[in-house]
Length: 295
Image 1 (tube, one colour):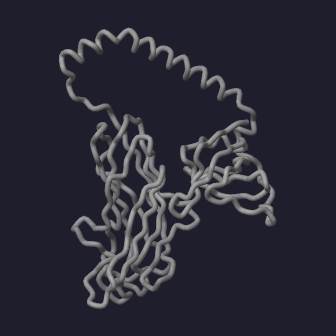
Image 2 (cartoon, one colour):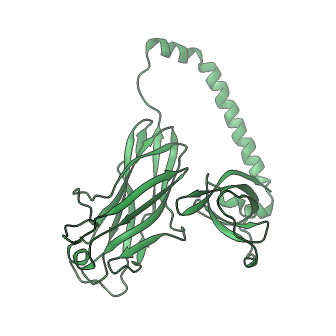
């Protein structure tokens, strides 16, 4: 392998096997690393990630740590190796994934390729969506990439997520079913008109939101060091200070400030709004469920 350049960082990219699928179909999301070299401690020996996905329309059905050739680049042939450890578990809209090589640094640096797929997640489409998301949580405080010397591997992110369009199943209906659909067409048209009116009303309400809910909140005071941090099982309430992806920084009513993962996506327009819910453990992070937001 080529020698590493000083200060060079490996690059992580996500890609999907399909840009659009129908309900009931499956697809893969691949996680690739590139920019490694034969230099000492410049190989991937472990990782710990949180992946966010739209659990309303997607289901995790499987995973693999093999590359495109069926080889796990963190589980290379070595007599003294204790083997590879890895798993991927979904909880709500989060997937906790980890992998740990049992190979020595000598074998990893000499035999691991410069670029390879280190993880592939398989999903099944459950319901229609214009753009179901799957994202690597870059802002997870416990995200980890380990080099062959058991230190932190410098990482840059190329593409950290994908979106998949999910369409209705296009099977031709039976004649009897087709007659029922034609009979219900007037009601469907009425429902569509009512839906359009509801969207217009929603847009009008959004325009009347107070300035605090439409603009990012000003810099907040530092965390109250004497306030205890919230934990799994706690019912919490507070104010949204910042939103990054599907994570939010919340100032709790007791003065503490914490980052939590959100069970459902929240718009950046709601920075400054009040939020409440219940915290549950979601892999390495706390996840806020039963979310309620008010101004």
